Amino acid sequence: MKKILVTGGTGFIGSHTVVSLIERGYHPVIIDNLDNSCRTVLDRVERICKVRPTFIEADVRDASALDAIFSEHDFECVIHFSGLKAVGESVEKPMRYYSNNVEGSIALLKAMRKHECWKLVFSSSSTVYGDPEQVPITESAKLSVTNPYGQTKLMVENILRDLSHADQRWKFTLLRYFNPVGAHESGLIGEDPNGIPNNLMPYIAQVAVGRLESLRVWGNDYDTPDGTGVRDYIHVVDLAEAHINALEHFKPSHGCRAYNIGTGEGYSVLDMVKAFEQASGQRVPYSIEARRAGDVATSYADAGLSAKEIGWAAQRGLAEIMRDQWNWQHNNPNGYTEQ
Ligand code: NAD
Ligand code: UDP
Picture: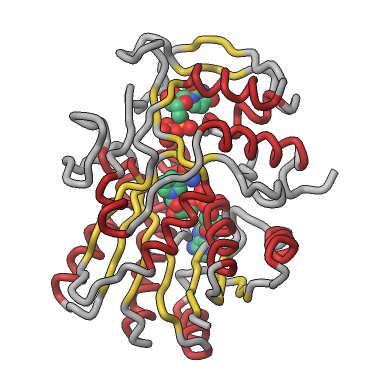
């Protein structure tokens, strides 16, 4: 059975990918410091898959922990999710972000080189496109970032591109996620943000379940059909499967390749509110507020290259996203924390 090292594997996207890996016959080994996740995820994955994933609690910046893991296991590939992702916090605490996301990636790459493991799938983000000049966004669009979180993603992308030029043994696939949402259809794993969510979907879900009072819609004066921001929302299980496609499509002359992981469809904030109300049967009250600093009007992917080169395309639409988001929220009103 091929072993895959999954950094950040108890997190939102990591846990869904661990399930997909097990279902596709791989043996995932997770390293996570539980900074933004918890051990309950392992119990839930075990309930879904009937297999408990191997888990090591460690920081990816810990060179000796990495050395021990790579000495014990022979990995086919690494999928690198670990890192911090809150844009606002990254502005206030940039060093925390550069350290976790950039230093962490460098420590991982050093361990990989030492142990001759040359393939890595990296969690990048559509944030590397900044305010896009045109939509849908293709992988060749100009890269520009507006906050330290985005900088860390672009810096790691650049490090990987440089390494692949310097040594052709390296093979890197950069997956640029658009907006990951939804949950596993079992309702056992999903997104469990700390505190008040920043992102739209968990916020809507917490309003519907009665944890939050009302959604604040950040601006209705954008140049979009209803004036609210338009995004490409991708079901997290589709996103998880993109990682399996990525690791099964490394070519002999691979170098460093980037792929958009989105549906190619854009939906507005109000489209999302309506669709969630329909799926849940709950009302989601909202108020229109001023624009949020740093937001762009419209962002959605051209996902043609990932279909062509790694054979991946989203299979789930808005109806499945809303059904699974509600199922997760309804069954786990307090996330992984027991009542
Ligand atoms: P998450 O916070 O749920 O998962 C990240 C995991 O990494 C957590 O379990 C956390 O405990 C762990 N971690 C953080 N720092 C670590 C360290 N130094 N050592 C070991 N473990 C560490 O986030 P997610 O939504 O699953 O995101 C996964 C990756 O995808 C991140 O790199 C994120 O930047 C990227 N991404 C996420 C989104 C999104 O909207 N969720 C969009 C684009 C890109
Ligand atoms: N949004 C909103 N209210 C919220 C959170 C988000 O109106 O409480 C809007 C936001 O302005 C953007 C869209 O929802 O147009 C998606 O925002 P999110 O933070 O989920 O993702 P990102 O900004 O990273 O694309």
